[in-house]
Structure formats: C-alpha cells, structure tokens
Image (cartoon, rainbow, N blue to C red; front, side, top):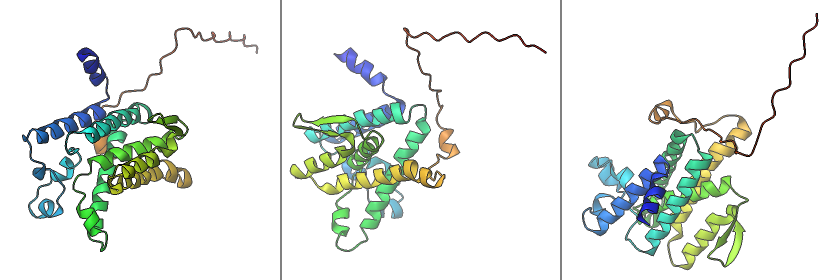
Length: 244
C-alpha cells in the first residue's frame, strides 16, 4: 500500500506534486501548531504597510482544519490539477504555471476590490484564504475544456462535465458552506477560459501568452506519442523512374 502511494506520488507532474505537497505540509503544520494561520492569511494592510508579501502566496496553501472538507479539496486538487497538467497542458509546464499565477492574481484582485465596495465589503472581508477558490478554478477550466465527459455525483445522478462546477456549487450551498468561495473560483476560471480559448478565436490575438522569463524557469519536454505495438505502417511507395 505504501509503495503504491509512493509510486502514485512520484508519477505526478511537477506543478501538481509541488502544490499538493505545499498544501498538505502547510495545513498539517497549522493543525499541529507548528505554523500559525495568522501568519498566512491574506491581509492587505500587512502586505502593503509591513511588506509581508509572503501572504500573497501562503493564503493559497492553507485549507483550514483537517476534516472531511480538507480531504474533499485535496482529492479535487490532486485529480483536476493533474488532469490539466498531463492533458491540456502536456509539454507546456510554463503555460500551466502561468494559468495558476493568473488565477491567483485575479482572485486576489477581486477580494481586494470587493473589500472596498459597500454592502458586499463585509462578505469579502471574511475571505482570507483563497486556496479553495484556486482549486475550484482548476475544476472550472477542466470542465470547460472537457464538456462532454459523463460524470456521476455520489451515484445519485449523471451529468456532463460542463455542469460539474454548478453541481459542486449546489452541493456547497446544501451543506451550509459559503457560495462566495466557489463563485470566485468560477469567475477566475471563466476569465482564463475566455481570454485563452475564446478570445483568440474571435480576434486572432492571445492576450495570455506566457512571458519568456516564466518559460525560462521550466525545461519543456517534447511530447512523444507512443505507437501501439500492434500497428504497422505501410512502407513508402517505390519511386517511379524519371524519364527525360
């Protein structure tokens, strides 16, 4: 069993493995009182006035207390982050990292701006950790890129992947969780999907092109398609003699 888990972990692509490891270590560290959540949460005042810039990153690593909800989000993080990195972003690690960076930036911006708007500022002020929203963003992007895959929710009913974010949003509301967290992930995910997949088709321009300095951080491996062993390709036809 332990060997199977180790093998599963080693086979994860680099971004998924790194994010999952950081999230588990941070959450476990807080549960054991090794790390204080008060040093991790998003606080614009402390970021701007006391230069605690690490909060812009650490608030995406802490998934609250270790309970069923934590296991639920770790499953979605490991599954959909891996699916995106291995399929949609296969051979494009830098592009996948840039997608996460874009999502984190959008989520942070929404919370900061929302905190300044009357009537909703109180709701946004309660959002101090955006880890769940970033995970939900990945679920949303995957569902938009794989809309026709059939899925089942707890064996109760089936639906296509295009409706997965809405099913999860409805489930969150039923169990009494705040819908804001999931809605923020959907907004960030739709912003990325539109700018990366829809807008280039409409205009021929790609506004989310990964910067060269981010590409320089990753060594892109060429995608090699393995030929099935039972498939043989026909030999090229013989060349006809050239006549003058």
